[in-house]
Amino acid sequence: MGLRGYGQAWLGVRGFWGILTLADKVLLVGLFCLGVGWALRPRSRGEVAVVVGPKGVVAEVRLDRADTLAVEGPLGTTYVAVGGGEAWIFSSPCPYKLCVRSGSVRRPGEVVVCIPNQVAVVIRGREGPDAVLR
Image (cartoon, rainbow, N blue to C red; front, side):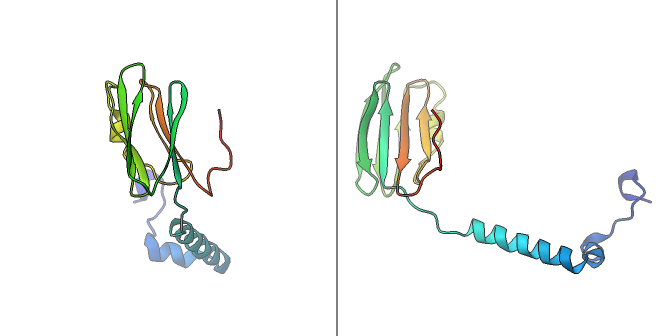
């Protein structure tokens, strides 16, 4: 009986590895090593949290200093906490609280946004995204 009705016999991992050529095996092992290396690479940490409100930049706070900011938006006050190398929105008057549940940001280019209250926290650092779209 074939595999799912296609008439092919199930080879298993050993059978599949046995039908590969040496070039196929080298390619697969190389791709696996590249994937592991990419996943374990050291990542840069952000240096500054830029807090943006409806009228523009509210504050730029270093991530190594503990601070709490209150940002006024159209719905009310959104509270942003910075410290320990990360920043997050911990309270907001928006209806679904997705910004609060999204957690903290710590790497350059990461953003947490409260769209209904028009508040954003952007992390800047030495290394960041290659391009920023507006």
